[in-house]
Length: 458
Ligand SMILES: [Cu+2]
Image (cartoon, rainbow, N blue to C red; front, side):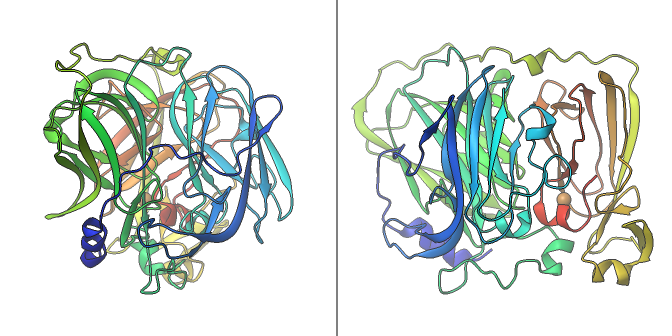
């Protein structure tokens, strides 16, 4: 972590601006869809001191445009690939039909340069999701190909402001260009993944949100970084969590104002603003014993209401929340081995047993049940409706963010929540329980994208 970059970020004059700028290039296609065009170009991460940085983006925006689609209705999102390399889009957390899941070579063919692919799906669950490239994501995601997707409730809760807070982590060089020379570096892949030196919120350094006393804010927070686990501190006593990974939870106050999001995870918050008019309230990223302000609430001089709203907001259940687990479940062990300072000395890669030297030559350093990379045989294959307990043994010294496509699960660490991405700390064991009720071939992988690329995928 480059502290200087953060200090610089936090010291620049924070400008207040409109919260939702109209996003460029978003045009409607029939019946109710969007067009997403991936391309290379220049983008400025700092409106106060604009510097053109070479990126990959959707609709010339970082993150890509906020896509809002209705729950339970079909949407079409037309993807046009204007990159010079193939790509695809994965809709993270959506329980949709397998053919639209966006995994090249498994659920669809690569979308080649100049080609168009129509993603057509009906999201069953409302909530906060995101979309991102699923091709060479260790490079394409690090360069910017991600965006926020909201499935809207038919009756969204009434709040004074709806804010989105998509947090990303970038590795910049001195020239303010993304450091591409270190893309694919084995040192990152075998450790915690690619860590950056600059944090952005909605693609900007030092974002300020203007709020008023007594306001109730719905705050959709997403970690869209390649690999950094974000531990964030909110300096507001009245901050409650109302959903995780898109799925409603019984609202609860945030313990000591600190929320941790692994890459891919989301939390919706309700914040009731209590600070004094004219004051500032930073949102801080905690890294070890250091504190980096990454965004700011600026309390203006208006008073929205004298008395805070006291009834908490509770979101209506999604169909996903109706999952009932039986006592009898298919037990699926998943051992995670490898990484720097690990004991892995061999693994099977592409059907061949290899020693660690050969694995590293093939850029593989992690294994699920002794197999590095996508195996020919699935981890399990079951009849629709089978209850699964994925019993993970994280037998290495690194944290991992385990993601299951097309399903939500109960993490036995917190059975009151449904997730699509679970954080396991070093040497931790845990079970992810779900009903395999969505037919097709689904990936299970670490959402630290460099770990996925170097073995953690099945
Ligand atoms: Cu990992």
